[in-house]
Length: 272
Image (cartoon, helix red, strand yellow):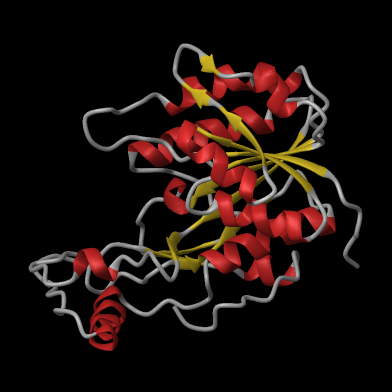
């Protein structure tokens, strides 16, 4: 049975997922403080009923009044991905380690940490929450360290949500693959999740008061990359991606059984 208690929530990272999540939480009666690194975005947050905060985490310091951002909230949602591509690479673990004492010094009781299924290797196996994480990417390695950092804290309870590839009406990987040639891993299964389900799963965790858990959050839909992206490009009327079969495909199939059975969440996006 879902609990209907309304609470105050701080949401670190009001971006592509965080902003609509914050507005959805407000619609359900929660009070939400939201953070952004852009001063221009403060008015957007305020217009949505979010209490805006200008916060920027760096490896050596926290810029902004993070204490005020956290004060008065019992739940913190962390939705800031590692920046490990391009010239401005960062140490995500160092940033989160710097944030941790601020959280522990406040009345935050529960944390939802948004992570990724990249903590699992591409080992051509079916993955559940009982599978040992053995990340083979730098982002996966850093995310796993941050997960462990937060789970080890005795000051609050942490539930980790490992999302697969994020998609939405305005975001789909087929756009970036369109017209490309010699794309590898044609037989690897897809592991995607729609933004509407990301929001629904987070809200379900809060309403059901589910803490000290880890969830792999991926839609129960796993065609091969070649089949899925080819059909999606045809549906959108854009140039087809072309795959190569010169090497063995490596991937993984992420099970969402714990989401549907233990959390009792029903996926809204029936197709991706």
